[in-house]
Length: 249
Image (cartoon, rainbow, N blue to C red; front, side):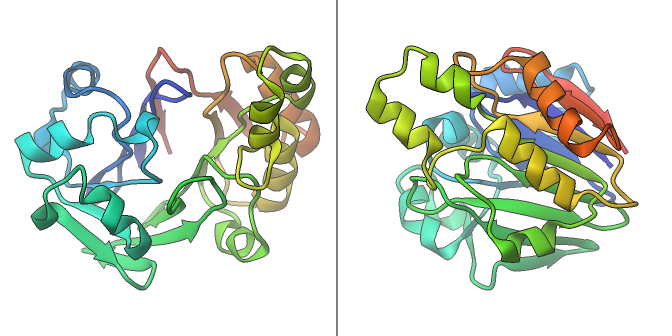
């Protein structure tokens, strides 16, 4: 399994996951020219994408969706609650509703994990074939059902959005601070660490912290906070907004 994080943060999010039989693009938060440019570094083009998954419909996750689907005719799998919003962006013929929160394509099994965020609908994903990936950003908390489903995966790409003290002492207006820390906001470094301590198992190979705030977080701080909580059991890295990252398991 390989993952290419094209970028992660409040300005844009997109990750290409290369499973055994399929190349899956999670979110399209960058312009099509930028996506093409990054993929070229890895000898890939948009034609190599088999289909798209979306976490939710905020701009930093769908900015390039209309262009990519229109030009390359890629299908987008979304939970039923998201269909109405995505129809405003993508031609209906290219939208595939997932009614039971699970689908299997060839040997790839995908579970949709409903998250808590201030969007019409928001989800994370578990992708499994011979390897397993858990991908979750943009959620105020992780419920017990999802935690059970997410246990002991090979690779975690998990939100670690903010340091709570930096957020509260920082420049955001009070109402925005309250949004970020609410149950429909974002995970803090400490929350990410506590969840990961519960999630990681014998099969876990690597953790990537994602969606770090440029205003309310620091890469080294996020990594240290999580490592201190999980006791250095697994390698921890942080995805960046302006740099792509390659991971192989």
